[in-house]
Image 1 (cartoon, rainbow, N blue to C red):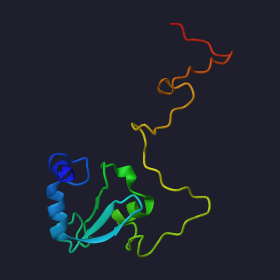
Image 2: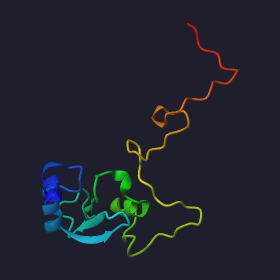
Image 3: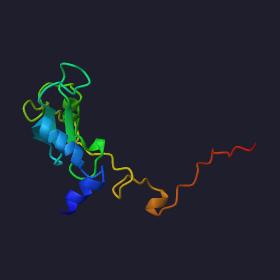
Image 4: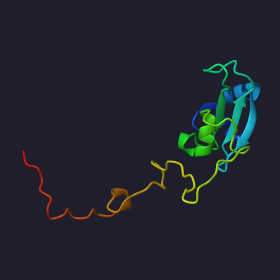
Length: 134
């Protein structure tokens, strides 16, 4: 019940009632990523911005943040790849790291040594530093 009320009154928690209705009526389910985001594609190009290309949507699991979409699904959403990654997976190089969404503004954000939020003091300036005097 709480999730339903959230979707009625907020746009940043998953999808609104309107988009759920549109996607349910106009699209087909394509796949889901490891984070729980669900991906859909329109059944035809009737409401597409570019004729010949079917419109594609993502319904986020939880907070709607574009950086939560992994690169392979991002490529599919933007018509870089024709097949979704659950049909034709992208080759993963040995040096590639796993996808991490942008954590800025969260408790998991990077805080360098000396950051106020980390509670430390910054390092003293090097000896060759001179303050500008007007």
